[in-house]
Length: 411
Image 1: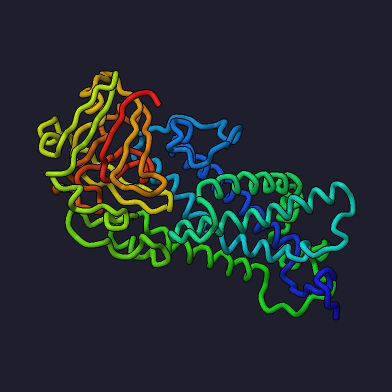
Image 2: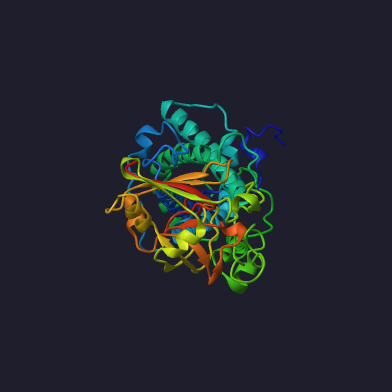
């Protein structure tokens, strides 16, 4: 028996072959393309070209060619795109692992390169495997709020995605025609035994190829069923047993809905949010500035909006009823009759998004509020008391909590 993994006879599974690999490859072709597009959309939602404050990927250069002003309609837009991105990514993990298992003999094949074309294919395969494992691993760790990797998640995942997708695209161009030819034998339980993935000395089968695909598909459905519920409220959320924001809502009452950071975690003390200490500083045209305490804000025109919260980790809430002062009204207080960009700063002293910038179209939307109430009651400390921003379709980190300062003007 060959002892070296570089020998084709070392790999004896009768499941490996062009048909099995092609089915998995076509699923990944569609799924990873959707992941890449929704990932780019998520990056655009952060408005990274609006202000360096929002840009967690400096020196992105040409990679930011497609960036656009993130819309506010429909209000559930980010909830949908990021929910699809994260949930689909988790559901594809069994497919990815099965695909890697099906082609693992090629990773050990010798010689490393038989020609220039073969060398380029091997290089793309190395970037494809390494990039895929890196992207899925960092994505899952981010969903689980486990930041054990070095550096910030945003640049790691962003730059890694471009490397991975470039290799994926090159591999797809090379292999898709062959995969489609192999899929013409879908009805053939014993497809061609030719091909470099087929063992010359296969072991006795214990499951059919269709049975193996059923196991992979079942694993994907199981992950889908145990994670997708965190994008919903009520009993469905309790099905998301593998997600940090699954299970029962955190507490009851008007403020009993999901959060990422508590006031205690962010270092917000009751002494600095009390009516005696807290003031909102609003600055605008020609240095015009006003300081408002919470009773003064309550004297302004108050409006209500029904808006969800959706975060990069893929979780979201249904619409909550927010009540507060429109952002465009605050801009008018400091001389901006036409809505402009705004820089929002939090009492929070640490964290990547203790400051966040919003575009003029987001300020202009009548549903964009400096919220003082939620679901008919004062904001709880964990939901941003005494005041927080809430903007339709914006990622959760841009809905700044514990707001201390707002600076209106072109950014």
